[in-house]
Length: 136
Image (cartoon, rainbow, N blue to C red; front, side):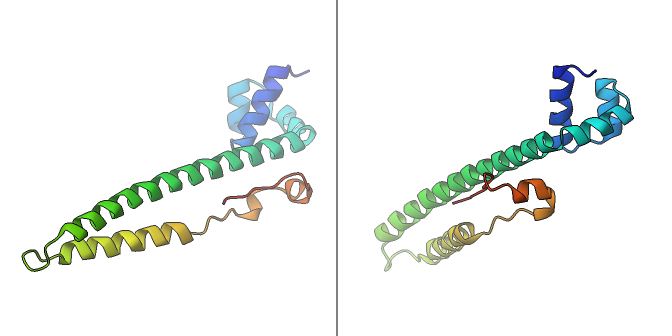
C-alpha cells in the first residue's frame, strides 16, 4: 500500500508532466503500481493540473499588468518632455518616434490574446462546471 505522502508526491509529479519512469525512480515505486495509481487518482491529477495552469495564467496576468504600468510611466515621461520641448529650438522627432513605439507596444499588450490549448486538460476538467479559467 502506498503512503499518503507518496500518493501526494505522485499526484504532484504527474500533474507537472513527469514520466512514469522518472516518477518510479524518484519515489522508488514500480511502474505498474504508478500506472494503477494514475488510474485511481486521475481526477486529483487533472484538478492539480488545472490549478497549476490557473496559477500560471495569474502570474502572466500580473507580469502583463506590470509591463503595461512601466510602459505607461515611460509614456508619461515622454509626454512631459514633449510638452516642455521648444519646437523652434529642439527637433522632437525622436520623442515623437518613442511615443509612437510606446503607444504601439501598450496597444499590443492590451490586445494580446492569451490562450490555452484545450488538449492540456482532460475531458474530466472540461466537463466539470465548477472549473473556470478567466483572464481579465
